[in-house]
Amino acid sequence: MSATNVNGAAAGSTPPLREAASTSEPIKAIRLRHPWRVVFAVLLVAIFAIFVIDAAFRPAYDWPSVGKYLFDRRISMAALVTLELTVFSMVIAIILGVILAVMRLSPNPVVKAVAWFYLWIFRGTPVYVQLTIWGLISLIYTSIDIGLPFMTPWVSFSTNAALNTFTLAVIGLALNEAAYMAEIVRAGLLAVDKGQEEASVALGMSWSQTMTRVILPQSMRVIIPPTGNEVISMLKTTSLVTAVPFSLELFTRSRDISAETFNPIPLLIVASIWYLFFTSILMVGQYFLEKRFSRGVGDRQADKPEPGAGTGAITGVMPVVGAGQPTVIVPPKQNNPGTPGDGGAR
Amino acid sequence: MSDTTAGGVASADVPMVLAEQVTKSFGSHEVLKGITLEVKRGEVMCLVGPSGSGKSTFLRCINHLEVLSAGRLSVDGELIGYRESNGKLYEMAPKEAAKQRRDIGMVFQRFNLFPHMTALQNVMEAPLRVKGLPKAQVESTARELLARVGLADRADYYPAHLSGGQQQRVAIARALAMEPKLMLFDEPTSALDPELVGEVLDVMKGLAKEGMTMIVVTHEMGFAREVADSLVFMDAGVVVESGLPSEVLANPRHARTQAFLSKVL
Picture 1 (cartoon, rainbow over the protein chains, first blue to last red):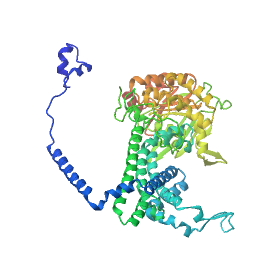
Picture 2: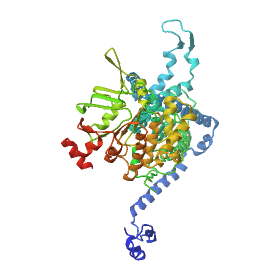
Picture 3: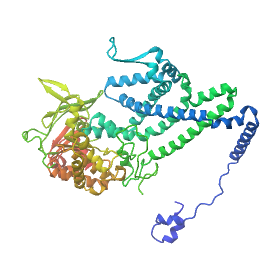
Picture 4: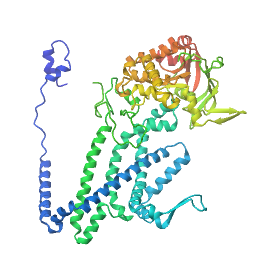
């Protein structure tokens, strides 16, 4: 409104047009000052600097050892194993989580109950305890038999031979994580507008077709961000697989080395640096993934913004490519640039 | 498509929709209190009435999106949602219900297009997945349908890039792709800007002209007067008045119809 009297004269008798408003000058005002912010910032930087300088010369940190072990072959191999544990367990957890979430929303009460029971068990007990139990599985079930109950099994092999500690660690982490992934996926499925299901059903599509073709692809936008979170969380949870006991991942490996050197602190720093390195990469990845999947939401509407809401709470545009595969995390190509909040006619 | 009697040639005298004392309650709230009406083959019926009168619920009962509490409802002589044998009713398996829905097209107030698919993919989805028709055939039919609703050049647009009127026309094409014998319209123009209403109504008029059996819940009295063969006024879950649109609109007999029409017209 401040523009009207500036261009009023130029416009003459005709009412001022909006494009004329661009000739108005930007407001020149002395900006509000925030002296206390500066004071606190200086203070915090000073405290941090003191801490860093102090740490640099404190012998207990043993910086030369940190440098020596940071790229030690044993450590870097352990970092790789940690990464493998994370990837394998997350992939299984996501697949299982999607299945469980769909089961929980199924109209079939039996299927629903099974999913609920799974969640009750695996969310209700600590992952550390679960990992310990998985480690002892060969004591509970000494052999894996395939056959009819109470009969001589057709095939039988020793549990110890079939499942090494790495496999058990992956199973333990994955089954626990699946319970949490199931809740994330369920939230995503519920976020899809009810009208989408109705439209699909009205076309004669079955429940499973409705899920895989219509609901799941649309829920990806809601599912992706917390899943990224879970991946970062999983990376750190891998340090618990020592309970299995599996000892070749980053944390246990550095503990083992420090047990020989009687110098635990530098190795803890080394492990932390590696964890931070991986989480930083994952955070960057998550940032781009989220940006990608929030695209198309509140996107340009040729009509008033309201009818957009008619197509559901989610107007995110995703192609059908891979729509049937719930495990797709890779952001598919999108052809409608735009950021949330830039809705409205252009 | 124009041959709406396909699949029911022998039963030409059987009404397309026959509702007998259809009752629907949500908990203790009775939304439909015994609706009895008949829609003939090729008939266009407009359902009008104040919001909350049960028009939409009745429409949703017809394709089993809502389950009846009491009464009987049949489409093309086939009981909806139940199988009858030896005087007993058997609940239908979801597969059978889905099969019935294939032949009943539905258009929603808020379009409900699949936002992650282009207009063309929206139209192709059901014939491909439900009927399992070959892709090339489905695509050419889908393009014809989009051309028919005037959107041939918008085939590769995502719903978010279409106006409300265009989205609703795609939704109509999507429903037509299943070659339904009956089309249900649930306030198809209520979510549209006034200037976009006309383009959707034009498509519906064309459809009516081709002989499609249609039940339209609407507030567009002009459309009802021009296109509909019959008009049903509902209020508080009952049919208050029905007849030829010209008669009901010009000389409403019931006080409630008069009151409603005086506000709408």
